[in-house]
Length: 127
Image 1 (cartoon, rainbow, N blue to C red):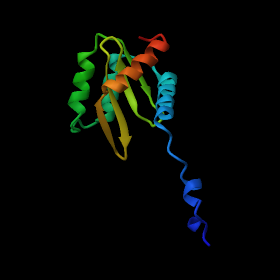
Image 2: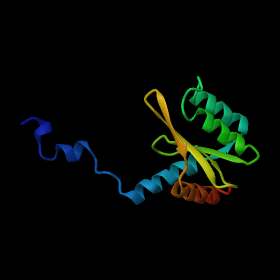
Image 3: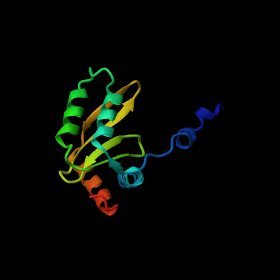
Image 4: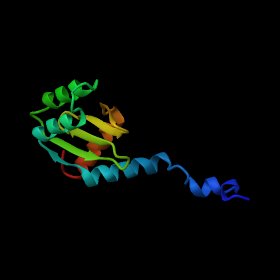
């Protein structure tokens, strides 16, 4: 019998998925370890890196979002899955991005994500 035909092959090759609470705990820990202050100039440069030709549907939204919050202190970090974020503790707003192949997925942080980052920033004394 080939090893891949063994009944326990899949169980050994593909580890069981993490439960939700464990995944959230890992994300929070990664955010805590990577969260740092970021300047407006650094974030605008990030936008140019993410969208070099400006044609991505989120290029303008990202740039405008950063400009709208330029008077606020920003925090930047990453989760264990490679999802980068920019978080503004004062207004409790943020944006995320993740490289998928040659492109980036981008979106605004939702209520649950904002709650988690608020907790992490507060625990780290960065709120």
